[in-house]
Image 1 (cartoon, rainbow, N blue to C red):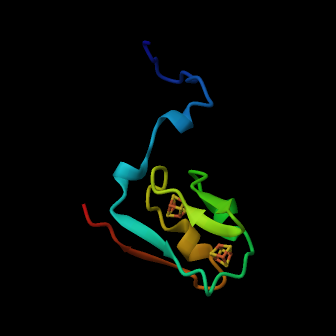
Image 2: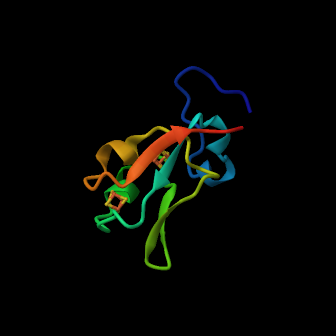
Length: 85
Ligand code: SF4
Ligand code: SF4
């Protein structure tokens, strides 16, 4: 497909592109500090935070390590660590 300047590319394709390989920092969630507020799920630009069996989990296939969830978490429950590759 040729893409010209200003073109609008077909949407709804993000599931097909795992962005986890971009990551140089990894968010780690401390469940015992989590207050179940849902902020991390709301702010994640990659929709990489989900509730699984009543607990928040980060999907590292899609998390690109931007740190927004850690920055916004009101309970200081998410910490960014250097990604080991
Ligand atoms: S933002 Fe922090 S406290 Fe809120 S659900 Fe996420 S990890 Fe838990
Ligand atoms: S680091 Fe960024 S991409 Fe990864 S879960 Fe947090 S907000 Fe989403």
